[in-house]
Length: 315
Image 1 (cartoon, rainbow, N blue to C red):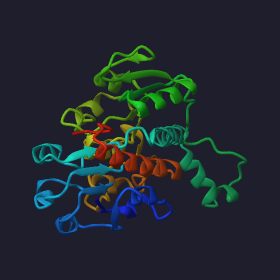
Image 2 (cartoon, helix red, strand yellow; image 1 turned 60 degrees about the vertical axis):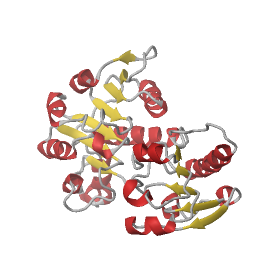
Image 3 (spheres, rainbow, N blue to C red; image 1 turned 180 degrees about the vertical axis):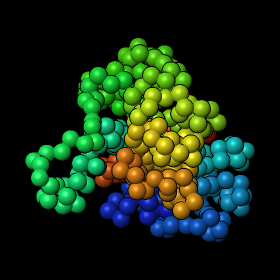
Image 4 (tube, rainbow, N blue to C red; image 1 turned 180 degrees about the horizontal axis):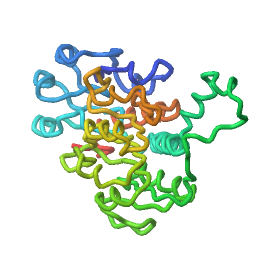
């Protein structure tokens, strides 16, 4: 079978792709522009992607394509309606990066609550060395124990974050579709009104797009901490940026954006010099261990598909 990897560069140069090479004839591209997709997939039976967007505009001539393997849990970069119409299967890799994303979410929240970046900057700038005081206690920070942490999304990542937050002594409010017995359940509006820390762990769908809206931000506590490791577009990014700049949002951590990489005209660009903001380059999923797991499971997805099994099938 002919397998094409369109953006292997996003998986990291340190990752061994041999598990995929062992199941077929592989052509690998470090990166692919949108106008190169059609030519590169002309004879492909399987395509492996990470961040590439695939749909009617660049798959129409991929006559032999049978399977799309996404090196991710989320698959909003693939037009599933077109795939169903054309009979192209789509597989994702659920759960491979749960610990990573939860780890970064908690790290961001802890750093923002304790103003860690500001204190570090005070020392690393040399200002501490020239000061007359042995310590500094500004900006004021508070214990995370006793705060109310709202977890939006109760899948694997959200559940792991809730466990971490509870272990830190937080009261947990959890917003999820399924019935909840471990933590106190709450809808998104209650979480926005009552929580000191809000972390977002939902897929991007028509329902979740823009769910952190200007109106909901307005209902939040002054100084709220928000962490988004889900998808950029679940937030109204302009509204978030405005709320950070006005002081309504006390701290903002984000690893995902509606456009990646974002340009100088993107709302997040306005926050680059804010000490109470932590922006990272969509790296929460990408520990060495998780990327290796992802490659192994994509190879399994291909093998299982050709064996006629429904394994991690989306459509």
